[in-house]
Length: 121
Image 1 (cartoon, rainbow, N blue to C red):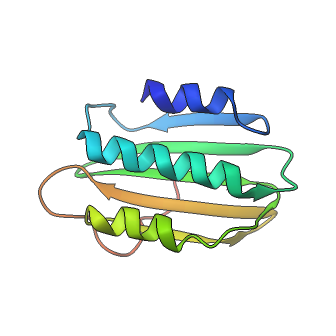
Image 2: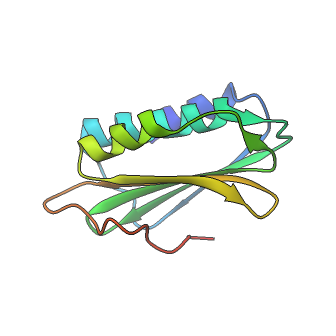
């Protein structure tokens, strides 16, 4: 996930990164999808003074969550299509004090439930 850490260096606001679960190799298409979710969610943040990115390695899935303390000026339909193309899903909505984008991306076998798993934080 080093490439995501590199992406955070150029973010338009300070970004905290939290990784949980047992890190492992993920298929390149899953990594590219996760990278795109992080990049687009941070780019869409409006009036945000800070953001956080959580990467969670779950059995059979990689969960990526981006939260900011601003809002979003973007429709996330294209990112939903990116996640759906590999059997995953994406939710994007206002959250207490800001905005949250959460994607669950299958890493092996069967895709995870279409219902987003509980938030890691």
